Amino acid sequence: MNQGLYIGVMSGTSLDGVDLVAVSFEPLKLHATLTIPFPEQLRNDLIDLTLPADNEIERMGVADVALARLIGESINRLIAENHLDKSQIRTVGSHGQTIRHRPEAGFSLQIGDPNLIAEVTGLPVVADFRRRDMAAGGQGAPLVPAFHQAIFQDQMVHRITLNLGGMANISVLPAGQPDQVFGYDTGPANILMDAWCFQETGQTFDQDGAWAATGQMNEALLSQLLSHDYFARPFPKSTGREDFNLEWLQQQIDDVQLSDSSLDHISPQDIQATLLQFTAQTVIDAILQTDLATGELWLCGGGAYNRTLWHAIANGIPQWSLKSTLEIGLAPTWVEATAFAWLARQRMLGLSGNLPAVTGAQGLRILGTLTHR
Image (cartoon, rainbow, N blue to C red; front, side):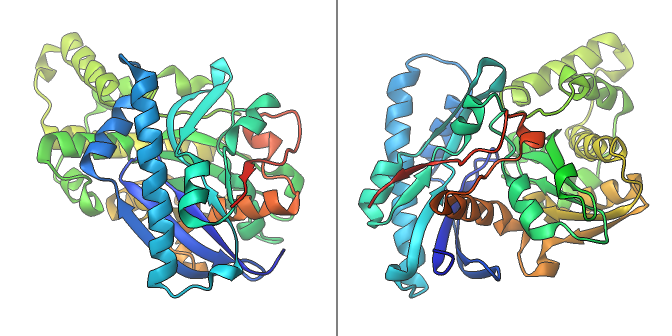
C-alpha cells in the first residue's frame, strides 16, 4: 500500500479553482499536476453558499453535484494528459469545497459528492476529512500540519511552515521535538486581498502585490482590522469566510471613516496595501508568540508568490530565514493538494491524520470516509 500513486484534490477558501496532483511517497515525488478554474456560475454559487441566504439546501445540492462532476472529469483529464497508469492509483483524496466552517457549533461542511467522483473516475475516493476530528472535539482544521510535520520537521533546525491560501495557517515544528508540534489559522491570507482587488479592478488577484505596492498602509484601518476578536482567541483555532469577508471589511472601513472625518476617503490602493500588511502583521504576531527565537519559515500557498507580501513578512521577523517549498521540489501551489493525497494514504493505511495539539481533538484519529470504486 506504500507504493503506487495517490491523487490529491484541493479547492480552498480563495475559490479560484481546483488543484490536482498525482504523487507518490517515500520518497515524495510529484508525477503530474493540473489546475482547473471554476466556471463562473459555479464559483458564484459556491461563494453565495458561504454565507446564509434563502433556499440553501436546494442550491447546495445543485452545487454539490456540479462540483463533484468537475472534480471527477478533472481527475480523468489529469490521468489522460499525463499518461498515468490508472492501475497504479491507490486512491483519490478529495478535500471538497468548504461552504460553512462553524467549529464553535461543532460542524464544518464540505461539498463535492465523493460517490459521484468515484463513479466518474472508477477510483476509490477518500473525502469528508474534517468531521471525524470534530466528533472528537476538534476544530477539524487546519489539517495540513500533520503533513507539514511528516515532510518538513528537522532534527537540528526549528521550522515553521506558513500556508498562504485564502486563510493563513502555521505549523510550528521545533527541531527534534515531534511531540511539541502545533499550529493554527493565523487569520486571512489572500481572501480579503483577492476579493477587494476583484471588486475594485476586475482582476481576480493582485499579481505579485504590485497594486498594493502603489498604496500607503492606513494605520487607523489596520488597527481596526486587528481589533477582530479572532486574534485574541487562544489556539487551537480556525477561521474562514464566516469571519472575514467583503461585508465585514466594508463595515471596518465605514467604522474608521465615521470615527475620523479626515479619513472620509481611503483610496482603493491604500486599502489594498493595508490588507496586505494586515495579513503580514497577523502572521508576524503569531510567529513572535511562539517560543522559537529563530529558524526557517517555509512558505507555501498562492501567497508565497506575492513578493510584496513576502518582504512585508520578512521585514517583521528578520531573525527568520524565509524559504519557498520549491526548494524541496514541491512548488507552493501544490502543497495543499499533496497534503490531501497524503491524508488519503494515511486513511488507506489505517493511520491517523490529525494533530490534537493543532485541532484540539481528544486524540489521534483516522480521518476521512472511503467511497469504493
